[in-house]
Length: 112
Image (cartoon, rainbow, N blue to C red; front, side, top):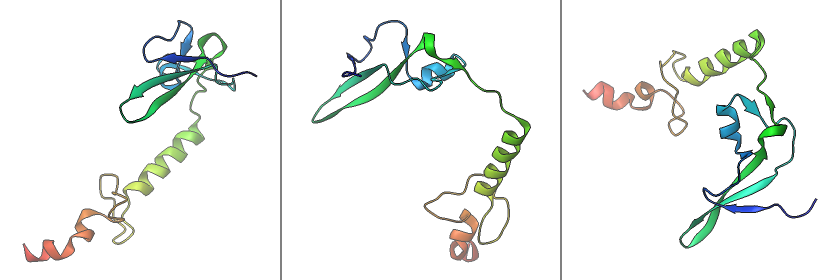
């Protein structure tokens, strides 16, 4: 395989799409290699790069199975459960705190 064709931002030919664009159409790359590259120039830094895939070679997105839905539900519940108090915070616990806001700022809660 030779070098990838490189296109400038917003001038890629028809028939190519990024992963996100494929997903919006209900498609996935389906194991195909990257077909081209899109570059968005930036000042004083290297350009932003997006990989393009051929739409004609894309495959439909696989449907979610009941087991996948259950695993997703379990993962989201774990992200909302505070490791300190064990309660469901009702929101995704910030990784910067590592615990719910109530536990992280317990001193401030007591003072108020």
